[in-house]
Structures are given as structure tokens and as C-alpha cells.
Amino acid sequence: MEQKAQLLARLQERTARRPSEAYRAFQARYRDAPDRFVQECFAWRRGEGPTLYQLEILRAIPDRRRVAVRGPHGLGKTALSSWTILWFALTRDGADWKCVTTASAWR
Image (cartoon, rainbow, N blue to C red; front, side, top):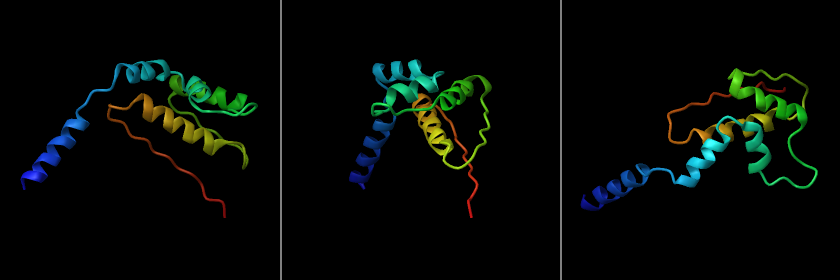
């Protein structure tokens, strides 16, 4: 029992830690700039990266809060969604947040 209590105490200690100053600076830098996050935080190969319309959509998210994207298969909507979720999760880490996603099924 004592070992279990020690493990629980260590787990609580780890989850109670505050983020480092560097992580806080990261969160502040990218909190309202998902387009900058996608451009600077991914290791893009030369000539690769988000398209202009993807960047335009990313820029609209902090102001409009809800953005609908419609287009044909292969447009990059799923990639855009995954980038947005990563941006939101990393810049809101430490706060209580939720992310709901939906997708249609191609049959």
C-alpha cells in the first residue's frame, strides 16, 4: 500500500508542475497565430508547406472562432484540421479545453 501511495504522490507532483518559461513564451507567441505556428513549427521540406488558402483559413480562426471549409477531395482539409488541433492543444495546454471534430465518410 505504501508503494502505491508513493507512486500516486509522484504522479500528482508531476501533473502539478508549472510549464517552463520557454513553454509559456511559446504559447504566448503562437496563441493567436495559427498560421505562424504551422509555418514555423513544422519541419517543411523545401517547396512544401501550407497553401495560401490554408493560411487564409488559419488566420481567420482566432477572430471568427468558427470556420467552415468546403471543397473537393485532396484539397488539404484534413491536414488543415490536424494542424489546427495541434496548434490549439499546444497553445491552450494547462487550461480546460475540448475539441470536437467531425468528418463525412466517403462510400
